[in-house]
Length: 376
Image (cartoon, rainbow, N blue to C red; front, side, top):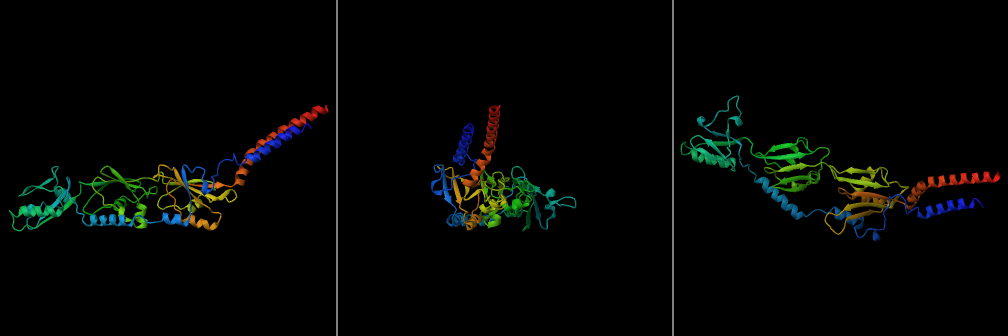
């Protein structure tokens, strides 16, 4: 009878552990019931279906893209460089070498040309000061030809820009050679500027290039330009534009739960699908994971009443993983693979077994001591 109390205690502990094993198992579980999410007041839960993927791949507003593309085409087609302060003009009047400053063998056209002064003018023989700021080369040529006609019969004038010093674009961030790029008579777009700066770096965020103009910043998707042919955002750059290519930063997805290697995955040059993310994390543990509980947590930025949307993939049917190959993840998505009830029980047993074993050893030692004392 003296052994009954310790044995009862051990049996009670095991019973409590059995009944509460799922209650205090260490995490790795999210209710896989789509119809009754445990936090439906904060999140929306949607199953990953063919319809959801079709809506995800739906093209943006075609009419808006056409309008933007048309505006870009017009801007590029009508582009003409406007002369600014600090530019150097090379002016030649044919058959009148006295009006043309010779460059010589040691002087470049930029060194021997006419520099646009701070007041926006240049000085030219016979006609004096000529206002050139804000004008095109053609307009300056016409002005000089008209005024020289009072002194020279049918003057033939050529005007070129020898040095572009008045306007530039600043490009910074994850590019090969960040710095200033001069605006010239050749139109420069976003992709042109990136190319002229040595291209995007290995840590560049292709989806979040920032263009700041007149104090306003807009985000451009260079990935869409290069890989999807959406050139509507390949904007024509202007003086004082700032083009910044950020690093990956928050451009990551996080894979957690019952996978071999929980980790964060950078989203650089290409998007990541759900299946790819699971594969790169070593796939899920078939013995421990609940195949019906593969979730993607995506925070809501447009809605105030919901914190996030949770997308569920039920992969009990292996064919469902095909849906995962088409479900594109977005930056800051969290992929979470839940564990099975058996997996939670195994973890609980592994936690409590050392404690139970130690308690059993102590009880056994106490009983042995009692037996020895009684024998004496």
